Length: 92
Ligand SMILES: [Zn+2]
Image (cartoon, rainbow, N blue to C red; front, side):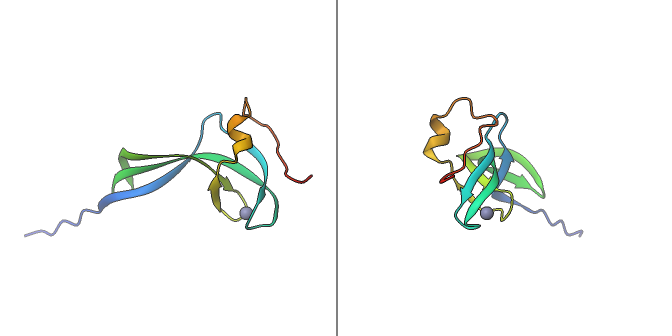
């Protein structure tokens, strides 16, 4: 009898948000201004490496391109419109 190993479960995924923020923010880990990309966070049911369907919406976050650290979207970003290409450097 052949043995089938099926890998499935739920895990978090992070995808760059369409029209989302791309610019410089102060990274708490890197201790300085780094390039951040706004991403959608969502939990999806996956079979092997295929995200079959979303099970939970995690909202949006910003990810540091240097250390990969993920942080909550700063309130300044949520109120700023449009978000596209608005550079924001704290304490500059
Ligand atoms: Zn960083």
